[in-house]
Image (cartoon, rainbow, N blue to C red):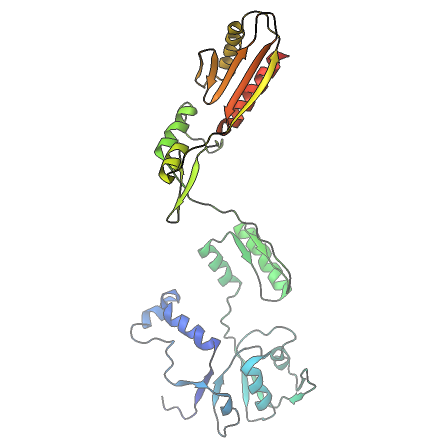
Length: 337
């Protein structure tokens, strides 16, 4: 290339970013991917790492330094040393936020005062070249369309332009878009989906309980079981199977409530009345009367008392049938009144 002037770049984030470009070459545009086989455009053979000791070296040189807005870092250090010399030139590669040294330079400032009251005269030539690696609004919209995120957060840019982009994202993608200010806390609500396998035995029992009706997404059902986690996978199992797999004994908790009911006649006659009432209300459930007790799943209803006295009605159920037991108890209370 017959280069007579050394070219340097600032070591640090620039070098790391360049390595990522090399690593993810397939993410670049079509033109770069086509030429990649013959020449990797991110492999700069004629550009060397820059050392701060080179700042005062005699002779011409070209330095690529960051940040581009001259608000801190190596680029600002070099600018302070080279700005007073009219033989030097700074090329601003893109947009600069208001208040930064880069913005002042682009707007023709000839003297710039820094925090320590240091005043630097700008005699060097200033040129602007639109060569920013930041995505514009179109690029950001394409990225959102490609990634299909649930939420978008804008963290860098001018407030007015960010507000415009925020509304554009909301309108086109119907997404929640956040634009927190510096130091502001932003709370993003998310919904977590956890995949869980269900044992075949539990599914069959659930289908039988619901009269083998197919699942209806609009009418969710409660399924009782034991959640077993093994090798980072979860499975909802029947209680007995889970206890057997874990090698532990199953302990049952039963709830019993007593109702007093005035109904002349033998207890068996009262039990028949209760049986018919429960069958009428629970048509899809298997209700039976055995040995003087009415059973529905784990719920047991038993009537005791003489013909003249008030009857005691005992309603008992396991904890997994809490909803069913409470319903039957409420049903019998209405009959008692």
